Image (tube, rainbow, N blue to C red):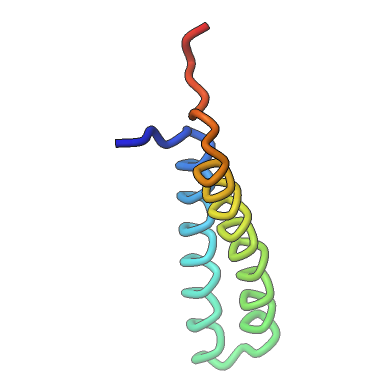
Length: 74
């Protein structure tokens, strides 16, 4: 089983938590209806989506290039 680097795990966790929180707040604000905060929360969802996209593309590029995963041992 290939090792997953800690920064990949941290990036995935941050992107999922950020997208989930922003989207939940957007739904809440749009149902209230507080349009300004709802649209703002939807806009804040976009950077977390691109963070996930960047992390997954980086991981896929590393896997396709055949580079061994970085280890913490010298």
